[in-house]
Amino acid sequence: MVNSFKDYNRNSHIDYWLLIAVLGLSIIGLIMVFSSSAILAKQNYNNKLYFFERQLIFFFIGIIIMLISLKIPVKFWIKFKYVFVSIGICLLALTVCSPLGIEAGNAKRWLDFKFFTFQPLEIVKVFLVFYLAYFYANKQDKIQSFGIGILPPLVITLFLSALLILQPDLGGAAFLLLLFLSVAFVGGVPLGKLFGLGIAGIGGLLFFIFSASYRIKRVEAFLHPFSDPGDKGYQLVQSFYGLANGGLLGVGLGEGKQKFFYLPEAHNDFILSILGEEMGFIGLSIVFLLVLILFWRWLKIVLSQEDLENKLLAFGLGLILLVGMFLNMGVVLGVLPPKGVTMPFVSYGGSSLLSSFLCVGILLKLERKG
Image (cartoon, rainbow, N blue to C red; front, side, top):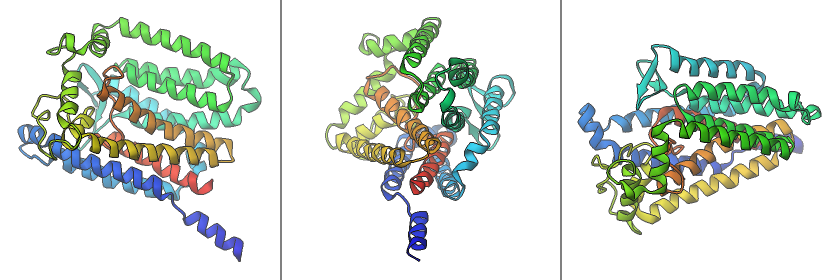
């Protein structure tokens, strides 16, 4: 009787701290999407609620996805890993070589399904983690062998990365490689082999950066943004202005100036700059606190898993969220080169929001198991 009650209590339990962090970030995101996009939406669609309404719809769909994933056994995601990876390959290929691919900013990274657009990279990250968690949990006896313990997942990761580079999306490719190296490290791959792969990856990254003039400009803008504030450094400089204008308490919600077409991607990649301008250091601190809570609960979930497959799955899914957050914050604050990385749960974007809620749903399920 007592054991039955314990099992029921464990299976019905939910990590409220993680849920509070995620919902808090999402609600702040909804408020800031409306504030930062209303002017643009009014000009382009004659409806200042255009972006807010779409984000709100994706928010509710994301909640449904999270609740459904809480009911799905964790083994389901691992069982169909090859199906998911194959779907990811097909989606990335469609962006490059089909009429569904949308070109924006000299890149084809989205698929147009008429009623909505979708960025395959966001879900491909999750699919790759499913495969990596399975592989490194079930190849422990062969992990010392490069041909068996490293090469198969490396080939799959490089193939997905190659499809991203064709878009082109070098940052997305680097993200997938970082996922591979991180999960492989936690999975027990010898550090010496990972170090060699890391050096090779950095070399490849530098090659692609210096082979394209626009990427060189991004690096120059990061290093010396104020040397050319009207061109190369424009976006970063405007982000700094927004943060500086906010001060401690901000200029007030809805009162920011940078969203008046001064700061490109105000409701997307640089939404934290608008938040900093309107809600000040206090507002940004609340966001950082929620990220810290998410980081704390993620570590707890990872460390509580007794099964290696579940441990690697939790590690990889949380890494997707947290690396995305740190990269976005780093770009906005000027400590990383400008790159189109959204802030999970906060930035506008249905693809990112849905895949992020899927990650959280599986993490909540794993927390119960742990």
